[in-house]
Image 1 (cartoon, rainbow, N blue to C red):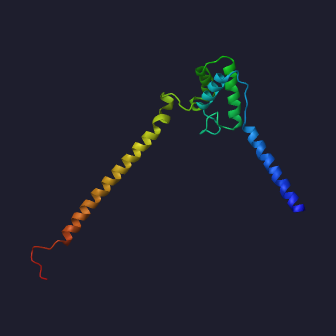
Image 2 (cartoon, rainbow, N blue to C red):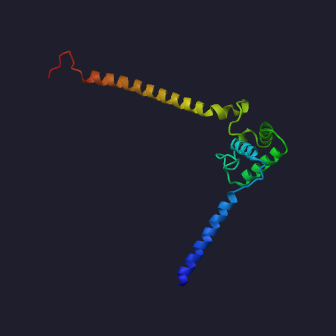
Image 3 (cartoon, rainbow, N blue to C red):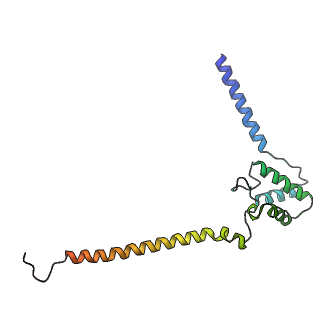
Length: 156
């Protein structure tokens, strides 16, 4: 009975801990109306979590993301437009905070770097294939000449 009681107590404690972790992820904010909530959700989906880097502010559970969501909410309450809020965050955290940073000199590598790497890889493959085909062509011609019968009259 003692072992059963311990297991039940452990299971209850585990369930309470898991419930507490899930409750921490909820971050209720006092929106005036549905339009403000929709605007907030759209805006936080366009901003990157600086800790997670592959999640937006709306989906991230990081402490910094929670703080930035509250900052965005406060800026909205101050009457700032979406562009002003984004600019405020860009001034503080650079263009990296935006999921779609603008195309400018400092972000050219970000926008066109993957394409440049892909093209460089394709060029390496093309050069390698051409070199190998050129190296095999003389070798196959030489082996064909070596195996052909000699017309000069060998005494076999």
